[in-house]
Length: 602
Image 1 (cartoon, one colour):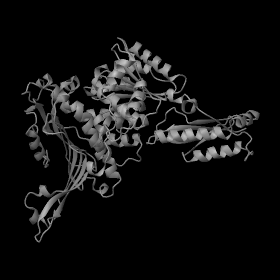
Image 2 (cartoon, rainbow, N blue to C red; image 1 turned 90 degrees about the vertical axis):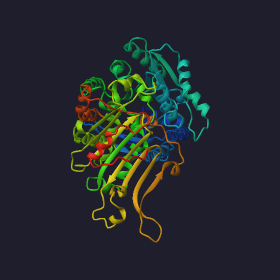
Image 3 (cartoon, one colour; image 1 turned 60 degrees about the vertical axis):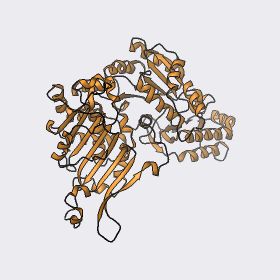
Image 4 (cartoon, rainbow, N blue to C red; image 1 turned 180 degrees about the vertical axis):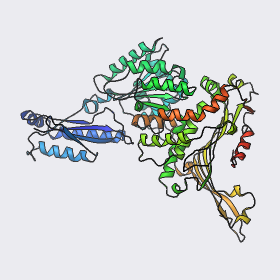
């Protein structure tokens, strides 16, 4: 006899679907008199109550519901079919009618069984997701990770019954951690409803684990505390490793052995920089992959959570006006610029040891170029996008040291950290080329540094001159001034700018280079979320397209290996530049060498 089994699961609204263990409902195969007895006991009210609770959960969390139909036959096997969330209402209605006596044709009618995780009266106190922040008392966790988690919780993107765990080697109690966290938590500027209540709810769901001197024992403690809070429910776990690179494996390997749940998925988040050399990075990757699957590892770079990065693919692939222009046929050069006004970064041990290339260029700059230059992916699935990104990274020509400018922030005020007295670069400019059919011969000029004149993050696309331009006499000799440009800007303020030539109103024929502006502050009256919020939500949803895969990591190292080798051999001295300046003068000679003019709209 064929038995039908229906399982309802909740998944995230973003692709790829988030698959939490919060099970909306289950239809269990029970036949005979037991079915009729349970049906009569439950009746219509149980069915309606279950449906109302499910709809409330959907409204609260923005989840989609996926119904999986599994028809199990004899020993020969079965077949599986998936239906969309729209099927849920009709399925419940049909079952209601069946149990009300409208349809008695089914010999073994299914019975709706409420899952305690979502529908039980105590469901709000039983967590469906556990998040552990390893290195909970560090600056990154205190100022970025916990505030981002609270922002997601406050906005309804985390389950109401989430549990947050802080893990470090300091001897603290739960209340101590909550006090540390609370000092950095704020609600949204544009809506403060129930802020204090939400804050208290969030803090009540945070717990502390003293790791002690041994992470092996510490991870056992973490797992025990999680299991105690979770109870018997199937719960997913996220581990944010906010620890230095040198401590990564010391934390990750015991975590893999002792702290993973066996009743849901596990995901770990690793902070940049991802290694010191290609070889050390490869060894770390091999160690991680010996304990975790690739799909579990999320290498996070908070700069990739900016709207500028996410808008790259949207602007290109959803606008016909841009897609045909996205190649060497029309694009003359591309500039990727990221600068910071302050020098606070170099006061930390991370930057002092790794420098601007490993910290910014290896991940943020190369990932930006990969997303900009990739071929259209077959879908928005994270793996499809990462497949295309790695092709771009493998096509980037190894950087010639003659096409590199290194800078070092001059310590003249006495306020700059001692790391600036070493050979560690704080400024990097280079010309890169992608050796494929789409981008052959197009220079990608990158420029990044700290302690410069202004905070700036933008991508500037400069198009070719108009062939045989009949207005050349009106333009003058400096044709670069009239070149069409598309600027995608995140700082100093979010904007999309298109530079075009336009006639100045009047009786004469005077041309002017004007900008068509889309300023986000004028167009969108919303607060822009922090990049950590964006990326943590992606981890929750299982969307990995902004996180570096292992093969992307290796490809990026191959691009920069020659430059890093030269620097590590102390064969080059960075050019000194003043704080608040534009950076080394040699960057301008580099741009001129490749036929590009830096835009100095500082």
